[in-house]
Image 1 (cartoon, one colour):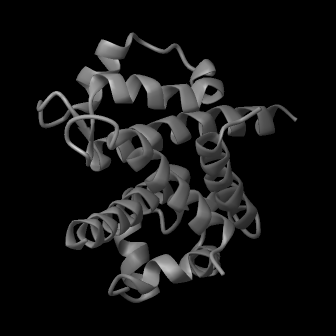
Image 2 (cartoon, chains in turn red, purple; image 1 turned 180 degrees about the vertical axis):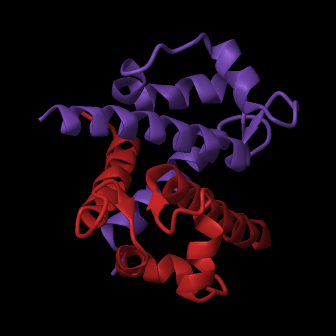
Length: 95
Length: 95
């Protein structure tokens, strides 16, 4: 029986592939697919100052192939989670 | 209402803090806390050749303070998820 943490990682995998297989390269996100996927992070992104999709794409697309592969996606998720952790810890410290 | 992906990221935050607050620095994992947390990843880790806890600690503890902070934890989770994605994609390509 997978643990909560394992189900969380599995969700990251599933959501990425749910969007990456919609068009073009099945294992990479096009700009359009990335834009759709980002709607899955509306609440989290609302805590940040979110740049335009082009800037996000530019930041994520480390190998400059105009697509976001899973490694690049995970770095975005990690950065977003770190930013939220920082926000979460600041709230805790105020208590 | 948070999406599945947001709940997954929230789980990562919660599980980290669930263990990091057990002893010492409330916002960092000691080796003991890391060892307990890794039990939450038994299935995922079973797909890999997992080194001893000391080696994992050595790899994760980027700033050499003998503890694993959230940033270091997220890098481990990202690396583990990338490894599992690689495994997942290989299985898909065999079909």
